[in-house]
Length: 630
Image 1 (tube, one colour):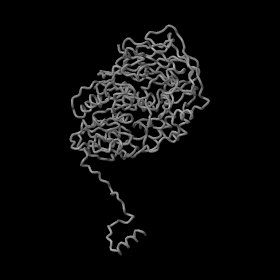
Image 2 (tube, helix red, strand yellow):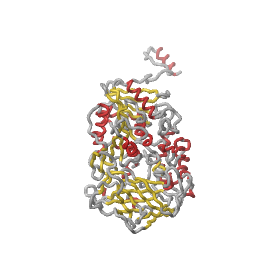
Image 3 (cartoon, rainbow, N blue to C red):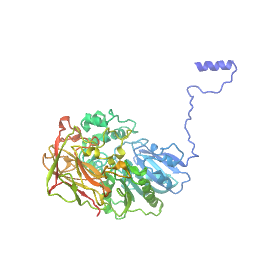
Image 4 (cartoon, rainbow, N blue to C red):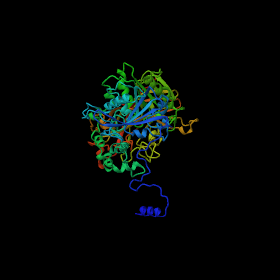
């Protein structure tokens, strides 16, 4: 070999030769890399905590240097504990935590020990993964473990093996991690002293993530693929179109697109497809129903975002389910002017809407930080039962409860496309043609999936509605210019009377604040149409959410459903607007407008044009019940 020949020649010539290893063992890397710890302001420990069934969960513990008697803040996540504790390549804990879930200003300011754990079956943890794993005792979970038992076992280990702690644990998290924070409240460990579920997944059919009142959110296909398909999300969903509007249209149905992209092999997709109605599959998993079975014993602050593009249903639903029985006063709620998870980011704006201050920072310093410190360190706090941001006036409110007002003030739609608080005796039916071949988009094209560059997903709920307000398949009703403020605080209720020439239909209703034609201090907002609340309802569930039934064609029928929570002031000089349409694409799959057993499996011939007629005026006219604060 060449190296042997060179070595022999060097020895004959008397040349000094440095000691070298043979090629078989030569390696410049150490057997185990030791990262110097002296200049860090924290100690990092990685442990595999055994659960009661032997499965080990990968857990990262970050302990501030010199910590003693510190409380622990736990997050359980399917989004990679290593990443969530390594945002900045820095020896400083604040930089390491400057990302999803952590709110480093609160964690560092409170001297907390930060603990982040991979849920079973994801990233570093062993075991199997099930999306929003159902609870023990449910017909959907044949095992003896769930997120509640895993949280209990984790906390039990932490209080026994982290000597710097004071034996108290709080749990917090956003979205899926908000769901796991809620799960911790089921048979909680005694050391769990406080919970802050932020924008949690609560009910995947009623209005979080997967469906909204029966309409399928096909924009989640890529999430289902990446989150369930692999343990580490390493296989990415591929889109062949720069504008995914084209991808969804060319596929036809949601089921055809899923099959073409390989989703049929994903167990959770098969469940979505099999449970398109609000059957026992969804009802058994709804966290508001689960938590209502026993008194809340852990002080809990629900965090809700008024423009949450992913989980806008969950926190208020849990509040409604638990607060009436909360005799101990353990339940609090915060309502902010944010998109999904913006409460831990900078939040002086939402899209083009300015709030006049960093609303998230104010909330973290004045609400979140003292709330945690009170229950984890016995420090005094002055936090209201409900802390709510009022858009329009852009002010924080301290409230004794929620909603502030019942939804009893009727906003009537009139035949001349106007709105008013007084009914009209003149009954009429206003029609438009809904064509699945030219659906109304939820955002102006081009449309991009979540996570792709230049995708306005986070702020789409505040997108100007003018691009669709003039479409012939969108009915627009506009009220007079207001000479006084109209304040709403609660959940508007839609009372729609309408007919379709088809046998199925979707109904989208939007409550909108129309800005003055000119806004001197912010010219870009002149004439802006800001949606205060909007949602979709799939008509086949008019009679029963749990059973699809065809719609009787050409017959005016009543549809009643809620819009998301609002805490808003329509200011003088503004107008109130209502829009009605029958598609919201490609966020939601197209309704074929022909009744078929499975909308996801609709065939091309099933998609038909229909004439939609909305009844206004008279005894059966359409109106929205507004929670107007007198």
